[in-house]
Image (cartoon, rainbow, N blue to C red; front, side, top):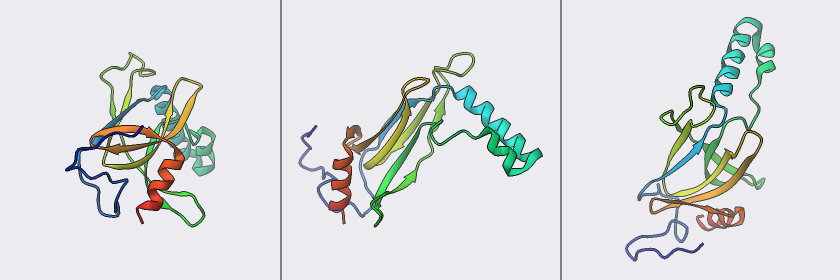
Length: 154
């Protein structure tokens, strides 16, 4: 997984990453499987909250992992959990089917750094993993590699 870097390029994993990372951004794209269902549930949840209050709105709860997400990892709390900043992606409907249940993509522009990614692989399968962006490329890394980088950047 080790890639050679141009000599004039500094790997943010090797040095002080406290400063805002500069360099080429990477693009992470993932399909939002069931986007039409998610939109209907969000609408129903909003209507229930309007007419029945917060308790009624919970009847249509989307759950924690209905939507894919990307979070930039900023550090580690003393509890050992990651300090994260959840990013907003941009939806692309150019490849969507007529119902919007497949082919809708969520695209994230990533600056150099470490990220946690959650994506749906199919209607019933999902996956959470770590990635790093450097030199415009996004590559999967292990949780241990992400933790080591965060400890080294202090």
